[in-house]
Image 1 (cartoon, rainbow, N blue to C red):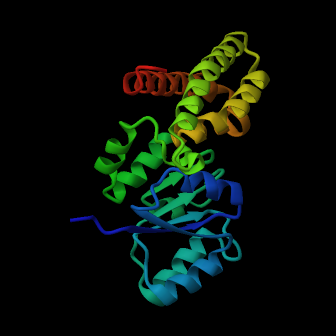
Image 2 (cartoon, rainbow, N blue to C red; image 1 turned 45 degrees about the horizontal axis):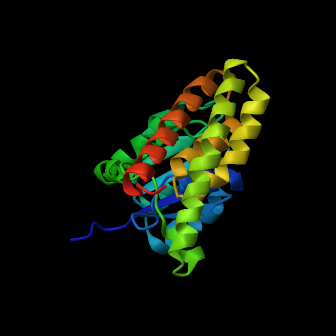
Length: 238
């Protein structure tokens, strides 16, 4: 029996952040309805009922997170779990009302907490064991298996040197170049639908703080090695 799809309402004025948040979840397991203002979310909840989780930006317009939550509780007795996105949490009352307060860029442990909260932890773990998918390439190939194999060969030939360049720049503390290489290699991971690696690249290119770079580089190296090992195990002629 297939588990029921979970529903998240996301309120975040940053459209790019909405995309990054959604990329962490399978659309088969989780439906995410996103709004740029709290008012849109309020009207939606009134019409459709409470979601399994509300992810709410602290500065959500027009009321802010605290007043938005108070309104929902007063008007419709809202009791769904809440996660608050905060730059610097200014109102202690929000922390009391929320299951967790997270900050941008979204961290792996924050997403893991949400998946566990929604009871997706086991499903998420099973997905992570598959380090690449070929659905996108198969769609492009339209039945041409040679095209798929050639694309995989290109990945194996071109991506390792880019990763090596990224690690060398990190060792030299050339963090700007680390971000540029990460940006350049990101589409290769997206091609194989490894969105974990793609998100790490995006974080390195655009969002990482200096003290986060070493950890992200280490994660990317691990994920890259998993992909290469899996491809070589599955395709002996590559």
